[in-house]
Length: 491
Ligand SMILES: Cc1cc2nc3c(=O)[nH]c(=O)nc-3n(C[C@H](O)[C@H](O)[C@H](O)COP(=O)(O)OP(=O)(O)OC[C@H]3O[C@@H](n4cnc5c(N)ncnc54)[C@H](O)[C@@H]3O)c2cc1C
Image (cartoon, rainbow, N blue to C red; front, side):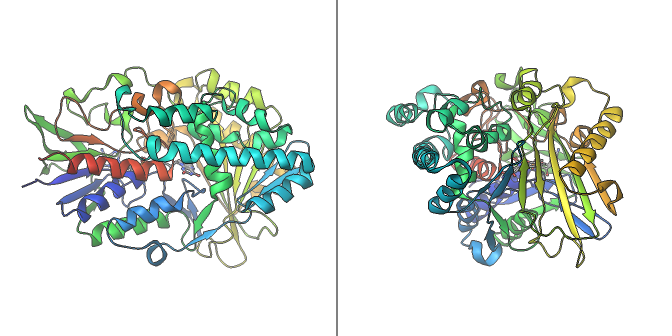
């Protein structure tokens, strides 16, 4: 007879774990410090405007489908999705732009328009290579657990991956096929999603650009990205999980034979034979976990850069604006250098901006109004900046830049909400970065923190701090893998 399971954190990873466990018939309670589900995939409002405070790029929807499917539920009923077209608009500093479009044919035509027919032929060869890389990497290395080198039983799979260029740098891999710097940047900026400089990021992370540019970008048909955790939470509850919000877990308790329960901040003790910690991992190691849970992989953590996100409520609409526009800054190498090579301590000199204008979401703003969210990568808290000074300085620089890019005088916007590194830290993110540990090779795959504590039976981990890593599909997979670790242990 297996005992109760407590999941700490109702972010996407915790919710996925709860669905898999409840569907397998386990007694599961999810405790969440915030007032609702979602974690990073959160929501906020200012006046009549509603903003998604986390992801705006939903890739690999099949992973959500698989998560809901574990409980016998289907994606189309719980979370109808729409495919964006274009997936992105990339605006380059020379005034040109590239729309990243669905389908190889349309995309080749767009590359021909920008860079000529020969480059389009090269693009198609590169695209095929990206597809092969994703195929070779996904099942053996992303969707399954492996924590020791000898678990790389599929040596053949690893060799195949190396042959496909996975051991080159992302930029080197793109340059092997493409000659137009704009296309190279369009397929390498995604390195920053994993906290790295594309000139140094291993080619294995080119799969992030495949997921974006080939696999496609989707959004929920209604309710913005926050509809994702709401649907997952409803499915978890329907499958039998108990979800308790506004209750931080204070301490995971363990005895000689492993986990025994979780103390909650209100003094209640939840007995458990297994616990999945699906909260920010470096932060959890500062007090939430029992002493035996220490993991050498976290002795000297390398944190990703953070971000400043400015959300605006507008009293007008933005005709012709793509859902996602990425304005790539002119100082490409200087920006990555400042953000990553110097330990993520400097705000970039002229960073790329990701603008999200969710015109598809009728609930985000009153009729005739719109919202605009702008993400600027920036330093995390380890740089020692005085954010009381730095945030207003970055905000003013951002508004001036947005004015020059044609977004009008956003100082006059009826609503504004700024998320900066101190606010991310206040939400429990170590080093003030919601992107957690970066994905350098020494924090990748079996070198990322372990799925299960070696010396505390019954203690498991899910979320962006574990393998496979950051991002919506990845943390859903980590939730499934943590649930599997619980189910495979008779406790
Ligand atoms: C601004 C931004 C943009 C992003 N853009 C994208 C994107 O476009 N595409 C993409 O794929 N990914 C994106 N991401 C990353 C993605 O959102 C995250 O990787 C993912 O949501 C992390 O989920 P998680 O479950 O691991 O952790 P979290 O979302 O951090 O969830 C952890 C939960 O644990 C709770 N918790 C912490 N401590 C306790 C405690 N002691 N007791 C109880 N509860 C606790 C927290 O409140 C939180 O709800 C973005 C993230 C941000 C912030």
